[in-house]
Image (cartoon, rainbow, N blue to C red; front, side, top):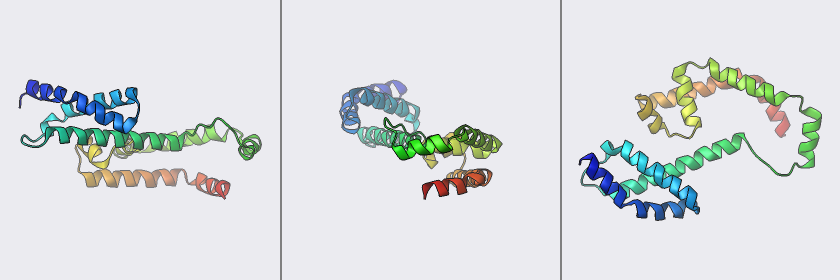
Length: 175
């Protein structure tokens, strides 16, 4: 299929994609973003489409996976940065009595530990942290999926080792 035919066919499903996106996001602006992301991915991965398969199902699968990846990425971000409007008294007490700039030093140590990772471990780990799936990382880096999993595992181990001094502090604080 020529790129013009592909683009015309893709555009003919825009309304269907829009409806499907709204069912996921429940917000028009987010749905528009999801449709745009889906169409861009479809164009980028047009060579992966096999002629004779259901084009609409292929597009919907791309959209579903994009939505899930965005959700996972947002969830991971929220785990790192939690925003609250109210500060409970126990958190206020902890903050007033214990916060002596530790957060800044911890983040500096995390960035330092990340910078010590060799690029072959750093890049897959960062992509995984950003919400990409193993197979997406493997495709982007053009390496086998098993290598991606191994490198992410090694990066985690190296980071745990580099940041070991914080394990005990966090465990005691949570008790």
